[in-house]
Length: 220
Length: 220
Image 1: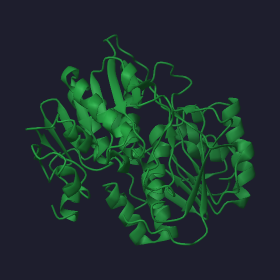
Image 2: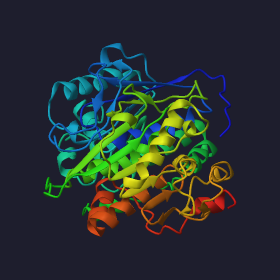
Image 3: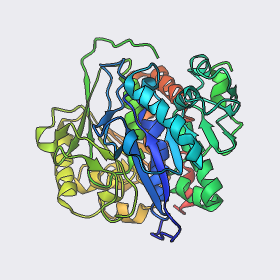
């Protein structure tokens, strides 16, 4: 893709990081955003409790492999954001201080956002932040019972690759984050832009949000 | 997936990092490897020139967004490896010191590897390391002419999601890294393990290495 940054004001995107976020939940969407930034004016902040590296290794799986990512801001020093992306992962469970800080940040930041996007069990964090109440939303299909119980006032949709309700975009598990991000890019930057990015990353998109092979697999 | 680490000796996997590697080239395979490590004994090393964080931001695109990853070892301190994974990305071009060090590391390490896996333009680094000579291999379809010119003695296969030749597994662009990694896991750990991981990450696999929608798209 050619470099063709237009002059529109930068869109500020923030990503919530916490120990045990799932790598592809974040880096599927982030790769799409990186490629988007080759031609559009995007500002990206990676947010966590401190500026220390954040590992994808689940705190409950010390023998697992993981990778450590550098945040760019703490929750306390985050710039104003247009978009907040919340990845899921084994670390999204429980009530460790990083999880509690992430939930508080989501609650406080949502009212000023243009868009909220969650991937996989990231919708559990959004549900606990009470921003999904009375909204249609979806989540990871293999953790359906556990995550939906976190949001008793959410209108959970079991059969969906992703769901939009107002400015909230929630996706199914892990790789569905790529599909919801491309769908969101299509909404904001147009169909051709989303297609260009999918072709650049040689990704065969799920383009129908209602087609969900994994709902059936997990008996939903 | 339940924690069920078996007692077989750890499989040592190394990943080559350099400035401007493409995020999904690395983190598609790494997510599969992370999930694999929940039930199998895997040791992972992230390798670069120094231990400084390595950014996905292409050196030629200062306005682009990127993420910084922490290496675990330098090329000089890498442990013995069974598997080497080489992601592609805009940074894989040219002859900067990190790229030259990566190429030298590939040349020196290949003879003792059980498997070499490349994603996208990562095969250009392997070609320049001369380990693909007289082998069948593929690469990113949108950069076909540029990358194949780096390996005049390679038997480049234009229409393939991935190609195996002996212990070398090369994939097409970016998201194809997920498919080649799951195919490799199927080969080494069995069909059910690969299926379990694909279902865990809710990924609709390309299971036929010869079906390549992007070769046609790019006129190959």
